Length: 60
Image (cartoon, rainbow, N blue to C red; front, side, top):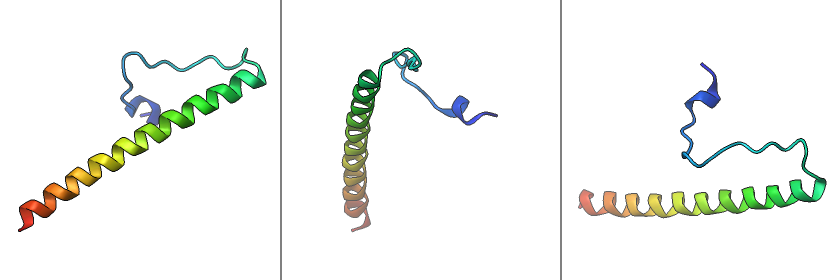
């Protein structure tokens, strides 16, 4: 099975056709992707923090 088949994507997500984009458009796209990655990493950190707090609470 292909790894890409395992990825669950939101219904509104679609891969962009990048072949026709200019260098400037590609750089803008990279900036958008990096911002989205940072947003997702922050959400992961927040969820880990909550999970760790809950784990600590129930260990006592």
